[in-house]
Length: 317
Image 1 (cartoon, rainbow, N blue to C red):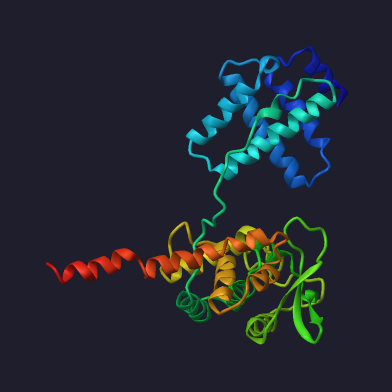
Image 2 (image 1 turned 180 degrees about the vertical axis):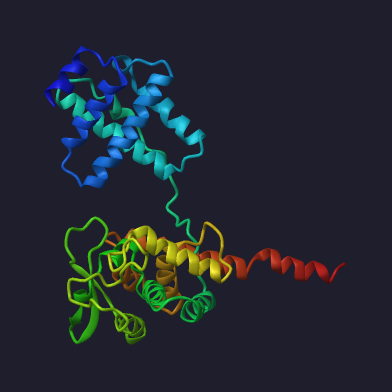
C-alpha cells in the first residue's frame, strides 16, 4: 500500500501506477469481493479514459468527472450502469482525501436520475401456463422444477443456486425453502413451498444420487461439472430457453421476468402489496409499490380512451 500511495503523491506517471492505486483503494474497502471487483473494473476504465483524453490525474476537477459521466450516457450505457461508475468515483475520492492523496472532487458528482420502473416484462397467467406445459413436456425434470419454483416463489437466480437439499424444511407446519437473499450472508429468510411448487422438485431429486442435506438443490448436467452446483448464468439460460420455447424471444423477457411475474400475479389474484413484499422479501415497501404500475398499464391498454373514440367515430363515417 505504501508504494502506491507514495507513487500517487509524486504524480501518477504510468497506467501501472494508477492501477496500483486503484488496487490499494479496493483492498481497503470493507465490502464483498464482488463490490471490490466492481470498483476495480470501473475505476480502471475511468483512468484509462483520463489517459486517452489527454487529461492529467493530478489536475482533474469535478467538471472532468461530469464530462466522463456524460460520455458514458451518450455511449448508450444505462443510468443504472452509469450510477455504479459514479458511486465508484465518489468512494475513491473520499478515500483519496482520507489518506491525503487528492482532494475529494467527487463530492459534487451526482448519479443520473432514473425512473423507478421494472424493465423486464412479467408474464400473463396464460403465458405462465404455456411455459409450465412446455417445460414439463420438452425439458428435463430439473429444468421444469426450476422454472416451476421461480414462477411460484419469485426467487432470484442466485437464490436458486445457493439452495441446498437440506434447506427444505418446515415452519409452523408449512413446508418452506430457506433462502439466502441478495447481499445476505446467511439463510435468514424463506419462501413457502406449496405442494405444486414442491412436487416437481421431489420428482427431480428422485433422479439424483446425492441428496444429502449439504448437496445443492439443483446440480449441473454439463460434462465438465456433472453433479456440481449450478452457476447463476446457467439458471438464467434455463429460464431464457423456456421463454424462447413459448415464443417470448425478446430481451424484456428474462429469468428476472419470472420474479416480476410472481409479484404481479399475486396482485392479479387479489393479493395485497404486503403479501407481495413478504413473498419477494423486499426490505423497502417502496420497491413493492412499483409493481402496481404494471396493473395500471394493463388497465390503460384494456380501457383506453382511444378505443372508445374509434367506436364513436365509426358510427359517423
